[in-house]
Length: 451
Ligand code: AMP
Image (cartoon, rainbow, N blue to C red; front, side, top):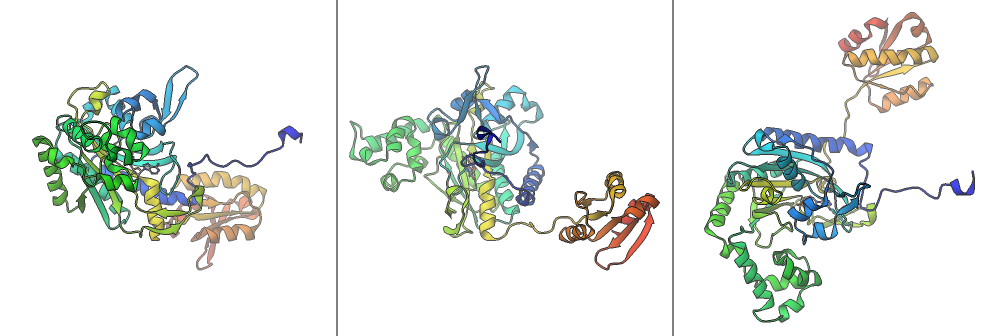
């Protein structure tokens, strides 16, 4: 090997990005199944929007000053000069698709669900990755009715509940609408800035908040920096400044949520960082896991704090119009973070039936002729509805029997040189050890009879 072609080391997945390994797949499969079942039981239709979207789509919908657009997009220019991004979230793409494909024809409102990867250039830490999966529900069109907000919260809540997650709590707030929010924004800015010039309060804010104060002041309410949290204690709350319509809407959503017996608490500081939200915003947490108690080695993360949201969402009545669609098309949606759900289940030790995979009939071959004929035999068995495990790459009887044992197979089909020549096969019960030779053409029916 020449010097230049010498391998320089092994590759790892990019920072904050992970593989879902074969041994984890059953677990993910369980979650996918749950998403599908819950979605279908509440009449949501599956949609898989594009993984790549125009960058401008998110600038216009999430807002140019949102953290996601400002700092977290994986963006690039194609050879043709288009500016694209790996989608950081699902809602904007679905709204784009709704307009582009006239999805209002599917229902008014149309109820959609999705599951797939999202990409955000974040600082990887516990529960925060650059590649992560979300499952989400959206209700777009029809009337702007509080019942839909409740249905979205319900779908997210039931999804978590179906995975046996306990002590769930919905935190809920309203951030008003374009009628009442501007006046509140002004009061909030006045509180920090004072009416003339910068006050001490403004100077005490963290850098991010000092900047947000002029571009996105509502974000000051959900800042995690302790000094900013201290300052917000006396800040005016939106609740008192809501217009009559927003007040009534909020009240109805809470009544529905109560009717559904979903545990919730009001959280005046919940704002969520995207421009497209109005009125209801919510997040779902679990208290089932103590705050810090698990250690994890992956990706530089050493300890996990379970104080992160498992799901979040809200109403977005202006989004469709913002993207050039029909005016007055309301919408509401929510998304669940799959990795976070997996982490919580792991920490709780309630990893879902990872256990038993469906045990399969094991085909054991001996000799070249049997090996060759096994290919056709497997196809016959498969077409006959019998699931087969094999290790055609192994030759020794001992190692094949060991594999059958490991696979927990209840039955083995032993296909040796003699059987291959005589067109017969041995069916062996791996539990009792009893075995019988049967003609090859009867293999499917004989196996079926014994299973
Ligand atoms: P969002 O799209 O920001 O409203 O997030 C909805 C849910 O997705 C959150 O409640 C999290 O469970 C999950 N999520 C968001 N960002 C990340 C991330 N960077 N890594 C892992 N999960 C995330």
